[in-house]
Amino acid sequence: MQDMELGHVECADCPIRHRAVCSRCETDELVLLEEIKYYRTFEAGQTIAWTGDKLDFVATVVSGIATLSQTLEDGRTQMVGLLLPSDFMGRPGREMATYDVTATTEVVMCCFRRRPFEELMRTTPHIAQRLLEMTLDELDAAREWMLLLGRKTAREKIASLLAIIARRDASLNLSKVGGSLEFDLPLTREAMADYLGLTLETVSRQVSALKREGVIELAGKRHISVPDFDRLMLETGDDCDGGMPV
Amino acid sequence: MQDMELGHVECADCPIRHRAVCSRCETDELVLLEEIKYYRTFEAGQTIAWTGDKLDFVATVVSGIATLSQTLEDGRTQMVGLLLPSDFMGRPGREMATYDVTATTEVVMCCFRRRPFEELMRTTPHIAQRLLEMTLDELDAAREWMLLLGRKTAREKIASLLAIIARRDASLNLSKVGGSLEFDLPLTREAMADYLGLTLETVSRQVSALKREGVIELAGKRHISVPDFDRLMLETGDDCDGGMPV
DNA sequence: GCGCGCACTTGATTTCAATCAAAGTCCTCC
DNA sequence: GGAGGACTTTGATTGAAATCAAGTGCGCGC
Image 1 (cartoon, rainbow over the protein chains, first blue to last red):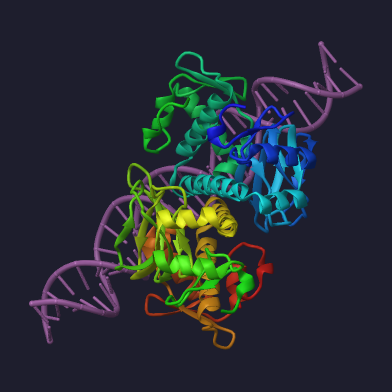
Image 2 (image 1 turned 90 degrees about the vertical axis):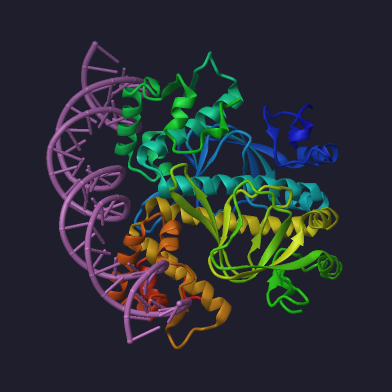
């Protein structure tokens, strides 16, 4: 039960910590959460919720990757969020899903029934504050993505996505080897395109270009290694003050 | 003191209601808020905060329009949010501004000193819940904007922006005349471009095109009237189920 | 009134990414 | 092992918006 300062709580059975829950009042909450929680598994490609569906639970991603996306009338789609392990899904106080939620890999979720969870929120003030913090983080991420979608070139978009996944992966898996980072892309070229506001052909071309120029190395289609993270960051167009991950 | 169900609270002096505050416990809060509030006026074009600045207040926009924007190293900028009257600005629990905040018109803000406001949040649980709701709304708006930035054409972007401003303006000012809506654009062509991820020339061209085709009418550069809102909505690419404003 | 500056418009050209089209690679299931 | 299909790459061409470059119109101060 370490890392309590971070506001995480380790669940009895889940391998990940639930960020939605406040550390200051953890004991009572854990007891309550244990009572209302259950697990669900979604297979790769399965739709977890369509926009407008009634969702009777909120959940934390335990493993796997899910995406949030929106679609225009004529079928153009834009991914608006990515759910990685430890991310929270669902809106206390909102019954309807606001986006299409899809499992891109097999996804295991630790679900909490909506009503009791909302009750818990009402009686445990810190939970709302914790959710507020998390939502503010999501909002920051969404706005950073707006900058990417509105102003970055295709190459910068790809580099940014790779940098984000690399950083996230490094902090979760500690897979850093020497100065290089390795990870498996959890997304198809099409999903990357939907996330970046590009076509899959453009994604493929830019990935090839980054490979050709030695910014990244590819083993197979999906396994990527980044020999020099700073070099990759240079391609993102961002301020590079963020520094190395981990 | 009507509209209490909406979670608004009417402030003694402000012409607008503060959405940040919960209606259920309004009396105590109002007393406290009165004690820690003060007004600030920013002139058109003035920067309210730069990214990274320490902000010792949170605030509600009373009048005028402010923008939130982010910038890449080489100066490309993307607006990531628009603050209209009654919108809330600032992050409880976060000292630093995450974006550049700029007044595009003269802006009057009703400010609350940070420390007492955060204290109020701690002692009044409903405030965190109210802020959570508002932040979720902002997140939805940001994600809708991601769809616009990533997948819409220039024409659709312009139509979407005009529809949003028209709808918002109609609900605030009840300026609907017959079947048509009229409003003044609060943004320059350049600001519109920054919001939509376009250049100002493209904005100008597309506005001209919509005018030429009778979708909108222009009086001067900034005064717009929309003879048929549904016609405008057709140009946005969205589902048109949202219907007429007001 | 006149000139100045700013916001905006319009035109010509270029460019980056989309689109259209055809292979190539890898994996699974017979 | 080989056929089929999903995913990916690459090439040729098109097209939408950016860029470069003049202009216009309007308000304001002198």
